[in-house]
Length: 118
Length: 118
Image: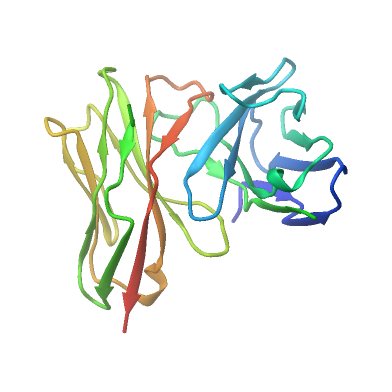
């Protein structure tokens, strides 16, 4: 079964709205989670690394004030797209990896959130 | 420079035949890991197989095997006995560094779309 849950799976909203996406690790505590963005027919691009109890680490070119990340507990990270505009429409997907496991353990991904801004 | 290169935007294969999806990588870190993920049209990322840079044997997982050629920096995915359900996007990804820490970023290739025909 799924080990990482992401909610909602689909969002359609008006321009200017802020949208919050949740990512939960279901059966393990994740001190670190990752947020990716994927445009249609393109690859996954890492946006930021979410760190429990501290500030997220953003990749170059990702606006911190636009994409707010909060990792308030060991099982939950949230990504808030603030004042969303049509160009923010994309597929957002989170991942987490069981801590303390061998380096060969994969990251587990949520099912993703399709965000459409009208 | 591209860290992960997948040169095949699309591949066709007939059901029950084998197919190889190419992946080359670039890193100066002696310790790294290579992952293959499958992404169906629904969007979720499904882990398929892992190869560590120090692994002596090529990884195998059921119908999936990884043709790891370290000197050539290639990690091609071989799917044997293709099934209709194998039709999806396939991404090669690399993790640099080692250790059991949970916060290890993945860099993805651009993906290959595989279509399996009856």
